[in-house]
Image 1 (cartoon, rainbow, N blue to C red):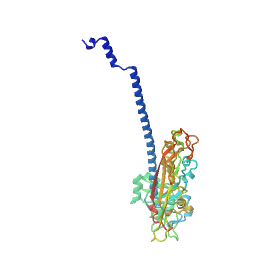
Image 2: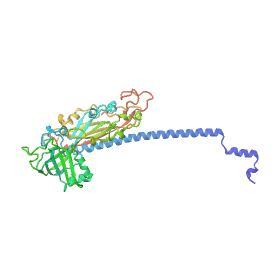
Image 3: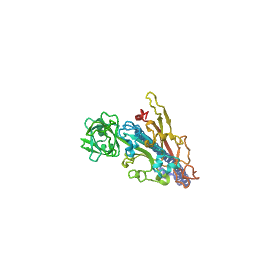
Image 4: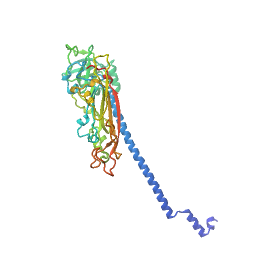
Length: 443
């Protein structure tokens, strides 16, 4: 006989009540559980939001780091196998004044004050609203390869220019170029529109021509021919004792020279990068006005080569340049004095005078180092107030204008209850020495 059968009816009812919860207890437990769940949700939501904000800031920091690294790589080759100043260089054979526009401007470094704003008017509304007026910089040198390619011969071309036959066998420069990218890399290295510098055997002055194209026969190549445009013509050897002879010219060294520009612009709708920068939630992020740091190569006529455009740093909003300049010294026994012209607020005119276009009287051959300040912003605003500027003009937060009516620049105060309108910034600095210009003191 079971124990439960022996219990009286009241005892059995008490036992059943002991095993259950009352309605009041269930309501209290449910309320407590909901409170705990709500608190956990709020904590998780805050942690997620904080994580997203820090991830966006980390992305901005990485973007600025990559952008500065790209600029530094080109600056270290400024003037390499080229000239610091095409208008003054005594080692140039020929008449630079007759060259195409881009060739005439060939220099190691050229800086244009507020050049990004001037060249891309109407695209930098967000930067201007925050008091940023980004510069632009053009760097000239052998950025594609740090090699001189042995020349087998140079002869008159069918189109009126010259054909430069490069040596294949026994050419370390050619073998290194092929090892980096194979035969397919040669058209990019000797890209049409670039400049070719040539030094002939026994000569100390350099010839400059414009690359019109390159023909590569065989794989591995049996023949590489660089075609030079008829204008400007390669100078003929005369009283100056530099230039080409009347027949086939055997031997010499050739190096491709490029000019690349860095500036800040908008890429919305760009053929290659349009999808990458397309706005996702512009009412929150202001992405329709975002800008990027761009690198693009210039041809001998000073026009951009569209296929060379690269997006170097996303959400870039400012680019400023400073320079360190050596005094002109005619006595080789006297060391020049180097004066630093840092990035400052307001802009230091000396920076832009020394680094001006050589066709406008700039003296970039005296620049010994370049200072770069690059600023990127987080993708979305996450702060409610501004923190002002540092003494050199560096802002600490970036207003995304237009998200709230009436708040269009950093002089406007957000109204009470406005959502976050300020994105955090990452500003990085870099100083780069120009080793290829170290010995130029007396031009």
